[in-house]
Amino acid sequence: MIQVLLLSTIAAQGSAIETIEVIGGKNLLASEPFTNINISHVSKEDLHGASNTIADWVVQVPGVSLNGQGGLYQSYSIRGLSRWRVRTEVNGIVLLTDRRAGNSASFIDPGLLQLASVQKGPAAMLYGSEAIGGVIAMNSVQGEQDTLELGYEDTGNGRRILAITGKENYNLAFAYRKKERSHAPNGDELNNGYEQFSSSFRYRHALTEDIELNMSWLPSVSKDVGKNGVAYPDSQIAMYPEDLHSLAQVSVKSKQWLVNVFHHYQNWDSDVLRIGKRHNLTSYQSHTLGANLYHEFDWHELPIRAGLDWTARRGVSITDQETSLKATDDITTNTLLDGQQDNIAAFINGIWDEQSWRVDFGARFDHFATNNFGVSKSDNHLSHSLGVTRKWQSHSVSLNYANAFRFPTLTELYFNGITPRGNTIGNPQLDPETSQGLELSYRHDHKIAKTTLNLFHTRLDDYIERIKLESGDRTYLNLDQASISGAEILTQVEVNDTLSYTLGYTHQKGKSDKGDYLSDIAPRKLSISGQYAWDSFEFKPALTYQLAKNQPGSGEAELDKSLVLDLNLNWYIDESWTLRAGVLNLFNRLHRTTADEDAPFHAERTVKFDISWQI
Image (cartoon, rainbow, N blue to C red; front, side):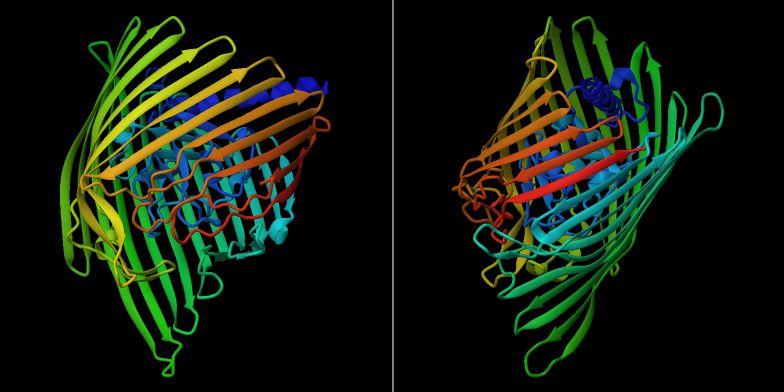
């Protein structure tokens, strides 16, 4: 009975992934013609290692890498493109923040999320400016199963609680977690503590036989979130004392159209103490408003989808209070940014599908406008994409091309002030980035094995690079041209009903036209993970070998190779109770996960336990 339960759990997981697969790739009505098989999906059940951040989920996908300094707000990159080049969405709400490391959804407990999808390559063009590198989209939990989970990990005395309840038409979840500062294997103290409250509410209602109403709300409050860095604690202590978010959306849809409106409010502080020099308390506040109109129809028997997107940032305010810690103890207060931004876009996408051939074509027009203290900037761009797929027997080959662009953010243009990384100077003369991307994909579906090979090349003009000046300050400049290329391989083998494993490999390289190495290019990485079910137990090991990075970009340092093993064990006690145990960094290796010059060592060996009760 228990083994049947385990296998049915895995089967249910596969069913859930299939649902997300059809709604990924801006397929807002989950229509079969617009299903994108090149989108990768990760659920809670797929995790083989840590699960404290959204980055822990998506980094399992080849081509996705950790980026920045680490900690709770760990950021990520896709194919060497990071920060504001990766679009992050939760329940269709785009996240636009003013963190220099990029947008992250880790103010939401991962326990509140059901699945995450990752879209790489030219097809992400339909999403617009923030998706020049790709899209990471997440959906909050749904379903009718009442669940209570408790968790504990020994490093930092981490503890968590998750409660979920729901019926056919609604779902309510609450999560709380807290962690103290922990240590690296060499004894260094890490500034990675935090406390977080977050919740999720989803509701749906059939207005008529063909029209459905959907609503969701995700509020979150984080406190005393440590900003991890090599300068801690000797010369700098950086914290986020409070981080408040509220994400809400309402949509109405039929089988052919959808109307969606959303709002994201954020209010957070950054507290940076430079020992013996100065103390800066910086406050960030903004509203993101948006609406989407989406329609599907047939034109001469060709499936077509078209839509309008409007995204606006209002009340984007950043103020700083600086206290000198020298003899004078002077206090100065400045408004660093007081701006707004509008993006209006129209897009269209069509498909020609005949026997073993498929052609995807699309275009998107964007208009951007920003204003800060009366200084304005605007631009327009027309993006387009074309993809051709040939299928035969168990094989398929795809060739995709797209040109895209990214408008500079308010922070890159106008922010001048202190951050946890140091003094940052905006550049109002920045031009938009433009890119031309080419991707060749091969897929082979065998009875027991599925293999995907991706080769990609991206050419970027006016690439916006964050550089470090001789003074130690950071600013942004346009590089004339830059290029990023690489390869990704993923093989999934299902030996039998109880044993499966996955092999992954990622290789990236990126340079400017002058021969300088680009930042955020991930080192080569090889990973293998497995899943073995025996009786009521499930064993899930994961081994990651990351090669050294000897050609760092601006703001980076050389990165040594690392070999990390994580182990996880699930015990399905009965139909209601599940016990999970895991060991992260089993060998207690001293290593850094990114080449960021401010990145500290990774945490020491961690033992964790979770117990789940499904009522």
